[in-house]
Amino acid sequence: MLSFFQSGEVTETIDGGKLLALFRSLDIRVRVETTIHVEEDGKLVSWSDKLKERTMETGESSSQETSEKNTL
View 1 (cartoon, rainbow, N blue to C red):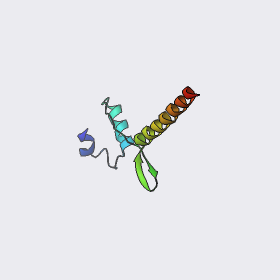
View 2 (view 1 turned 45 degrees about the vertical axis):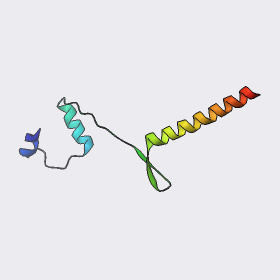
View 3 (view 1 turned 60 degrees about the horizontal axis):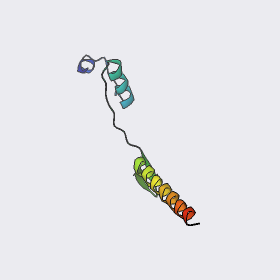
View 4 (view 1 turned 180 degrees about the vertical axis):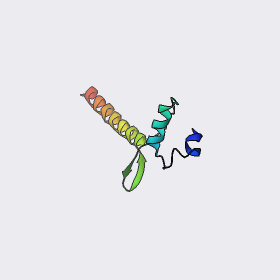
């Protein structure tokens, strides 16, 4: 791999996608850990936290609806 750079075969900067494609073409399995962030009220919030938040809100409303139905 290093020989590509040393020999001058690769002369440009390689972004993550191209590097991953290069590894895959050489049958090198690479696991890429990724995170997604969204902007909320001027702050970056992780997408997983946002989903957890929504799930909890949905769960709370569902349990409230269930308890209301049970009391009727």
